Image (cartoon, rainbow, N blue to C red):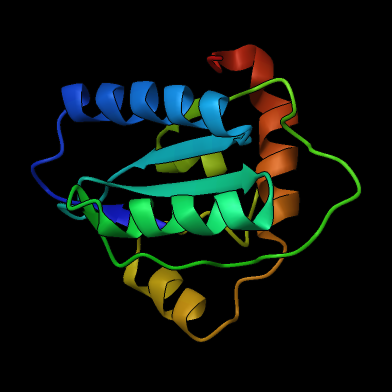
Amino acid sequence: MSQARPALSQADLDSILATSRAYNAEKDVTGMLLFVEGRDGNRGSFMQLLEGSADELEALRKRIFADPRHHTKLVLETGVKPQRDFADWSMAFRSVVARDLTAHPGFADIGTEEFQRRCEAGEVHQSLTFIRDFWSSDAEAGATA
């Protein structure tokens, strides 16, 4: 989870996605990137699920945390799963506005100070379930490979 810098452009988003897809395909990492358009003068928020070997994911986390195009970076959950949820996607992607999240009350306030506070306090749970359910319920609505 992270917050986009105010100057982040559509070209930056496109670059992030292209770079992610190429890197992930090379490293056998799969996952999904959600970009929630900003509110209250903020550019937006990223939420990402990544799947792969622990070593590759740690290397990727370091790359992501070093990227100056976003800030306030947090890892919400880590763990081992019996299978990948996004095995066919080097990086699935959705860009949404806040109202698209209303069916997911625990995540409807992504990008707000309150959501950030809850993340930092460890009060945000089930992020894997949210990403997986959000993707599967909205995949036909414009997700990209």
